[in-house]
Image (cartoon, rainbow, N blue to C red; front, side, top):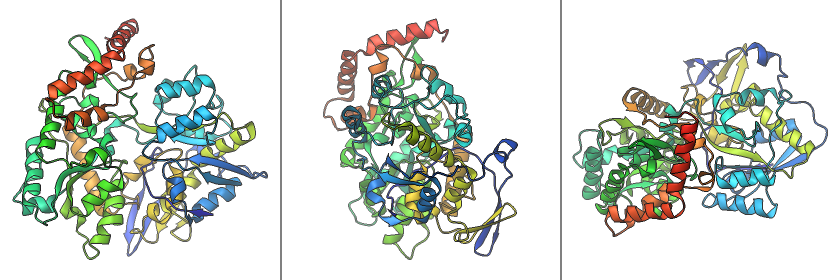
Length: 542
């Protein structure tokens, strides 16, 4: 089968501790014994299947990049007696594409999208476009084990779960890794900066020094991004940190201000973040092309020395170590391996109130859905697929590669032949497909994860430790985000679009922001706030 993948994103769940030691160019990892429940299960995770089935899957970039053979994908298909049929889906407008499929009855068997709590999710559910999972998952013990996490009950509708949440981390503390900002420390030093930034003023001064001095004479710009959806994950942290959003439009958080719950985006303090954003933009410290920048455009600019800083997403340092360092930087600087001396991660900066914050989303990002057009036999096979994807056998392949090719296993101990070889890049199709169930994010924080370089692990650990010690979380009640009211059920807040509009407008920030607020009021903002506060009172939420 012909496969290859372009984009790699983090994965999650199952925290497994590993004890390791380095022996010349190989590494040994002690694999813990399975608990009593797991030991009683079928070690292969799958019954034998006689009927071959094709399962269509819409997953970001999967179809466009599955162009090479991948022995791990072939192993999975052989074991389950299936063929994975990737369905093209555009990254730029995937929500609209899925909505169109849903309206025309053309949904693939499985598709992934960040839709929970949205109007279109409720529409799919009510129209019977998507299938609920069986209430009894005992026939799929690894899937049942995966779905046993605290947030699950709050995600059900009428005690039914209509999707599989793709868990990223076991705590929102690690959402820090979903909006990483990297900057050219080497160019900052050449421009006279001697201290890594700890405040917004220092970060602004660093960007200005690089842009003004342009040490490499490349007409360098300031901050760019892999997409404008990420702006809020940085700039809201200055004055309204709970306003950080995943871009779905339906995950907005509520804070109490002047005795009433309101979406954090509309806090009276939000204006200060918007003023800061406008200042960076008008001072030439934000890439003027950022509003239209997508994916590789921002990565290429940073790697080529045309941008001083980059906001990236994807969870863990994988988004930096692979997409920037290994796939771009080393091609331009093949004899240079001091990337993490030249490029630094921006640590959380002091906010307006003197505290430091990091973005907060959910413990999962996006969900996998099963089309209602799938018949009972295929539904069973799809559940077996998801079940297998959380089995120890599958996770071992995902983390270490092909047995006896990339690693050996003896008495529960895994020895990796070449720790410098990333399974994420060697088996791109398989690594991407593996994200269909979860991101395996907590394992990727483990030093034994060979997907990123040791220097990336060290930088990641430093960032996490700093954040756990130094950052706070603005108070908000997640129950209000999940709450259903007549107006709220169809209300969306696309704060990233609003930020870009404020950023590029010629009008004073206060004027354009009030115009945006008035637009939301016309859509029922005040009515939604009244409904939510009334229901919160009935629920005893003070």
